[in-house]
Length: 136
Image 1 (cartoon, rainbow, N blue to C red):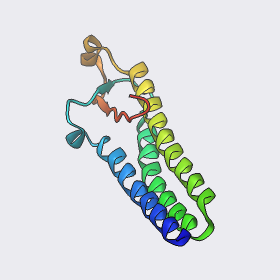
Image 2 (image 1 turned 180 degrees about the horizontal axis):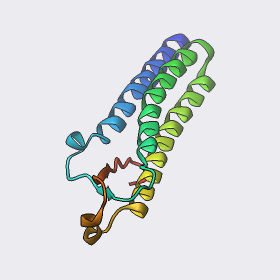
Image 3 (image 1 turned 120 degrees about the vertical axis):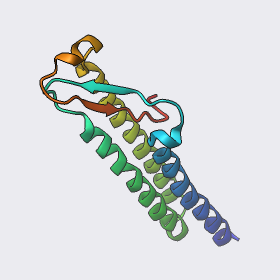
Image 4 (image 1 turned 180 degrees about the vertical axis):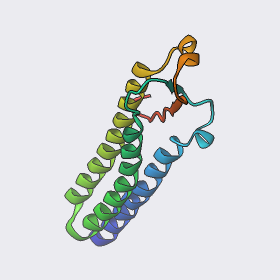
């Protein structure tokens, strides 16, 4: 009976580990999230905050892998491994949202005002914000 119960929880954890990162990824794609994304025009030579977005997008599949590994650990080792995996899953998704929020903060701080856009010496780069659940 205990083995069947741990199999059920392992399946739920693996399902959450696949579904939650898919939702987190879908909300970062402007077409899927709906609505108009927040965009920032970066005119001067400030470092573009794209690396924050790339790091956040890399954390999402890592969260899915961690959840699947945790579900196997739950099945083999018991509930403590499953709880640790669930905490790691949520922690990675919160970290991804925090990185996205940091990137948007940097973009907002270094964005060109509307009247200044015409005086840029080179093409304007546009940063599209990808807000998450925890730091909208």
